[in-house]
Amino acid sequence: MKTKNETKIIAEPGKQDVYIIREFDAPRELVFKAHEDPELIKQWLGPRDRVVRIDYYNSISGGSYRYTIEDKGGKEIAAFNGAIHEVTAPERIIQTFEFEGLPERGHVTLDTMTFEKLPGNRTRVTGHTVCRTQADRDAMMASGMERGVNEGYEKLDEILKRM
Amino acid sequence: MKTKNETKIIAEPGKQDVYIIREFDAPRELVFKAHEDPELIKQWLGPRDRVVRIDYYNSISGGSYRYTIEDKGGKEIAAFNGAIHEVTAPERIIQTFEFEGLPERGHVTLDTMTFEKLPGNRTRVTGHTVCRTQADRDAMMASGMERGVNEGYEKLDEILKRM
Image 1 (tube, each protein chain N blue to C red):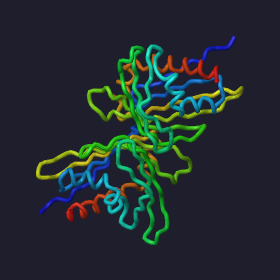
Image 2: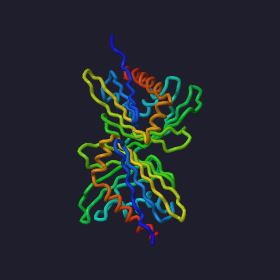
Image 3: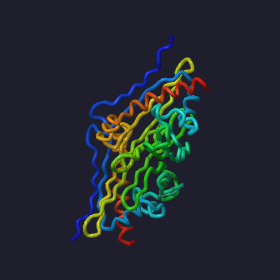
Image 4: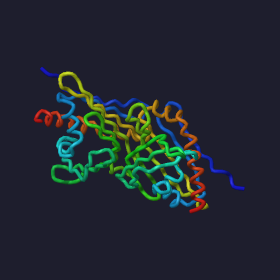
């Protein structure tokens, strides 16, 4: 029986970054495509009880994106936006990220996603988020983002199986 | 006699960020414009013995930029690029930054420039650079960037006096 792919979220005390590491039973090209193509992103990103609406998403170096998370009834819950520094298929995406619902704007992070080929047509995705301050990092960890990350990647497992 | 405006560069040991703080004898709107308008940026950015060539520069939230530093004879010395997360005139610019000359790509920083109004029509600019790692930060500090920052801001003083 296959072991379930667990998501590791690492936030060392006193630091201002977070690592999110996850393996997938699918080839790197597919896993990368699912992180780059907004039509796929909206099918897996975030918690199970939410719907992603893509406001714009231009997956190129120098592009930008914005998406809104809604409940199943279409009520807006949260919006996120960022600028895309680098898209290098199928290896790396570097972009900024901002949750628009904070009391003030400007708490932006720099996110690097690295896609590694593993034996047996498997892939490791390492997300590295750097916050502007340690306080920003700690607030992000306290925000309950873990459920969204875990459930999102479980939905991605299902999509990759169908692809 | 007026005291010269000194540039403070602060890089605490063991951290992955750098603060660059500088005051200008000019109103905030002008100082902001000089950081936003590529036609002005190319007149002051970098060391005195270099020339800035703007490859592209779209100063809007979601925009991007690239510029090349040349010597006075037109020989390329270095190139830099980034994605622009936020331009909020006359208060704040948030963008990514990458020196293209490193042995590998991906050593990107997240830069936030904050423009504060000071009494007497003066302005304080606080640049906050967050690196992906402490090693990246230490390499940036060791790169001799201080001369470029100091001389660039001295050129900006001269431009602001003429504006």
